[in-house]
Length: 231
Ligand SMILES: NC(=O)c1ccc[n+]([C@@H]2O[C@H](COP(=O)([O-])OP(=O)(O)OC[C@H]3O[C@@H](n4cnc5c(N)ncnc54)[C@H](OP(=O)(O)O)[C@@H]3O)[C@@H](O)[C@H]2O)c1
Image (cartoon, rainbow, N blue to C red):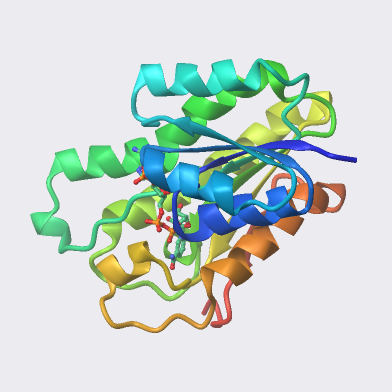
């Protein structure tokens, strides 16, 4: 059965590859980000299914409204992948509050806004998938300089567990993947020269399959997806 999914942060990196894989598997994908040209490239790259590009800044009310309007064309959003994210690397004492607020806005509140806006389209069998990071996964090896990012990623993991209790009665599932290093622009900006063991194509393919199927087996779970030992 063809499904309808919404992927945030679909203009590049992991989100782009997740959206492309889902479309090429025949699904309808509402693909959102701020970069219009890159979303249009994504729409052209899809060989099957359908990409519906929606240009939106997830920190703005108008952007969230545009996404909700696009979802109006569909009876149900079967999968929502909260993938959009932003990173900052710098010492804690030099990271000002506006940077903290921006990282919370993009990595946490954007997901909160999207879930609230799309709730009427999230029904029995829908799967919300939050993309977190090993930086925010309890007990994993931590790297200095990622306090705001790690805290925001831990917060979205916490949101996942608590919201799953609230949505369970309606049979809406919510899970969180705490992913390890993937070779994207974000990683290159934060850790220049670091070579990740996983490509965005590989991770996008994994996430696409996970959002379609894994809620048959998991709910309210925060799962590490990393090759390194969390300890
Ligand atoms: N790469 C890694 O090693 C790694 C590791 C752990 C977790 N993650 C997580 O995986 C997710 C994807 O990461 P990535 O590496 O693919 O990052 P990326 O290449 O930097 O892509 C980030 C995406 O988020 C979108 N975005 C950023 N700010 C936005 C805003 N205000 N409104 C709407 N969209 C916004 C960007 O699109 P526009 O700029 O066009 O808006 C872009 O599509 C993120 O949540 C990240 O934290 C990545």
